[in-house]
Image (cartoon, rainbow, N blue to C red):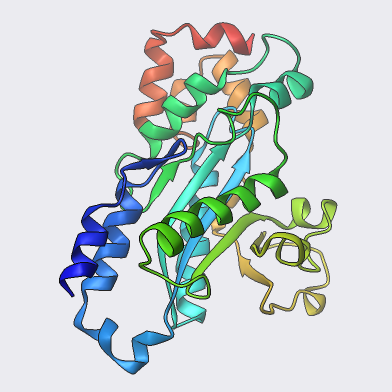
Length: 268
């Protein structure tokens, strides 16, 4: 037990551009529970959720999806505890190709706004690994990297969990999952990453075909899911601050309103 506490205390607050303070605290709390020594808890799985995207900027719909994913995963799988969730903004190279040169918010400021929006969350944080790379890395490789980094840290270096206990889930919408052929378990087959697919409440897709399994889990989206990044950028260009309260965290809205970093110039 004393060795276990020493291992937990030695966990780094950041590992390869990934902040771990919240996740470490949650994992430590779970492992410190008396129940962890029982046979019931011996088979418990500890999940880390990951989502990626331009996040130009992050809006409350992105956060709602992650919250819904955590709630539904733990509700339907009593043997799984979510210890952390990461929001990974895409590399500037990707946004340059998508929006055009100087027509997107640079990663430095997207990260800053994500930190503001998630400051009060006990489990969600920004992951800078993807946007800190020297070139664009697509989401399957970002997911694989998350598996490698978390296994290296928690399973190999500190030996707090086995690889079987640690599970990584890539969270995305149904449209993205179908477009990128994720519904068949592609990420698990090639990188050991499970996929958690969030579908809109009014999805017209044949729901009979959306069956969860060991590799892919489907969940219903929250009612307010359908917030649009395009709409957010339009409202920002027109400085519709009151309307933006529906889409952005208050601290992010205030930051953009005051605009000390001249971010609004990137959205013209």
